Image 1 (cartoon, rainbow, N blue to C red):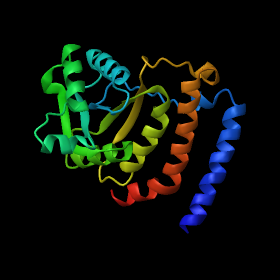
Image 2 (cartoon, rainbow, N blue to C red):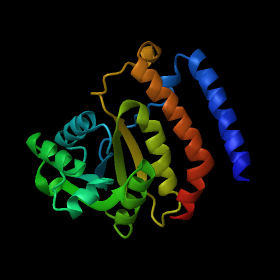
Image 3 (tube, rainbow, N blue to C red):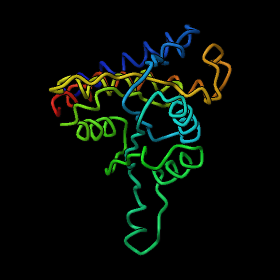
Length: 215
């Protein structure tokens, strides 16, 4: 069964590569933007921090949200350093410091403990935090430009079987220095676009079902 899935994934990747190469709108499909007039919280996804931090700060300053949720990311070998008494500055601490400097008040920042190494894990940790909190039922996912489609798919799948509905919106960072209408002219943009299609295919085939079952 697993070998069949891998075979299907290879075919999908191959077809995606062909379509991406010939379709100039491939990057635009990866961008999801549906900003509501208001929501309960931003979920600032870890990864490319400067552009996501700036976007989150801008949204907060527009009085669109009340809170900013940040999931503690995995630090890998950093745990071994901490075990030996070496302090490790975590990404979540850097994010909070930057948001405070940009004017977001400390009481608005909510750091969720965890050891997240993927967007799926971030979604599950946020879902667990929102369980039993009916006052927080709308989220704005803030991420880099080409990551927003997959991030929205993941979060909607994570909350699909929740007892209370949670509405997922998306706000791609306007500080991402890549043009979706000229993505094929930029080597880094080409790499990101192709990788996102591969990761979306992998999510649909392998991770989506497990994410729903864990709800």
